[in-house]
Amino acid sequence: MTKALDIVVLGLSLSSSWGNGHATTFRALLRGAAGLGHRITFLERDVPWYADHRDLPDPDFCAFHLYPDLAALEAHAATIRDADAVVVGSYVPDGGAVIDRVLELARGVVAFYDIDTPVTLAQLARGETQSLEARQIPLFDVYFSFTGGPTVDRLERELGARAARALYCSVEPERYRPTGEPYEWDLGYLGTYSPDRQPSLERLLIEPARRLPGKRFVVAGPQYPDDIAWPENVTRIPHLPPADHPSFYARQRFTLNVTRADMIVAGWSPSVRLFEAGACATAIVGDHWEGLGTLLPDGEAMLVAHDTDDVVRILGELPAMRRDAIAARARAIVLSEHTGTARAREFVAGLAEAGAARGAAPRKKVAGP
Image 1 (cartoon, rainbow, N blue to C red):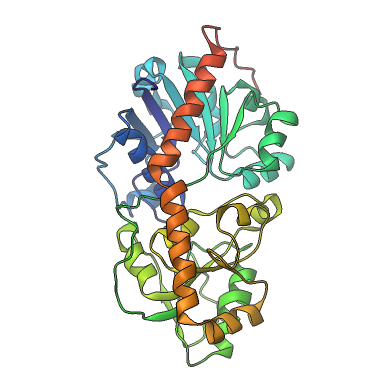
Image 2 (tube, rainbow, N blue to C red):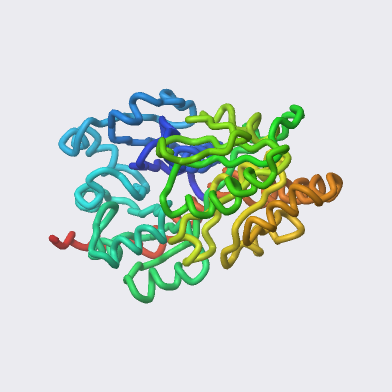
């Protein structure tokens, strides 16, 4: 059994789920790790857009601290230095500078958790360095990737990662479960607006709503432009806090999963919404990408839709008994393989493996830009 670890995480956000999927990903993972006996400290940059929308300001599973700017991170230097492991997440503000400072301070394992791997790699290919710099990738003891499959091999082979490990998102089954509420919508979608997801949302929800005026649809999430022409039978919810997610899923006959373009190209990139809906036993309709069948097989645990006609056919023709069987199978798979506790075991094992591989060797000097 792995000894209890002191783990420091610097992530985009734990306290606010507004406009990001990082918060719920971190909550499930770190609550799971805390439940296994590990001690967690989370450091979050205090930014206005999350400060105005905090739905978990005082987490009960970790020590939580906000820091206003890069200089203020020095107040936590001793905590970073003395930790058994320090994990920096993607999209942390001033990510490159934060990583350099962590690498200078930390005596234990240093890891990167990329919750946006295909997006990160696309940015690096364009010379953008929002989350990290290419020179920093070989300096991590382990690179945890939200995306599995061939991308993990690419991180090691092409980008020099010492050890790349897939670490998918997960769900807290105590919070995401069936509620038994009556159906209110025939198809719904939960997600922040993204330009590269919008064409799929148009094809798989908005156009079906136009064709099926007698059915009810819903889209929840922030940042959608005012000029979108929503059909009259589409309800809009500007923001839905995580506490309301199970009820939202329960009131849908089907829920839509739409994947970002970079993640479709990479494959093996399950959204946290996929596991949340599955845990709530809501039947999932989603777009196709490589690796999906290894997680939730098409026709068994979800339904892949390629175009508007597929969605119209599913909503109009699929028997309720078959829909419920698909939803039940998804829930069984998620509860077996994709809970926060299951993912935390993978996370801690990856940290322990990286620590053993590093041994007592001194950390490489951080190279300048």
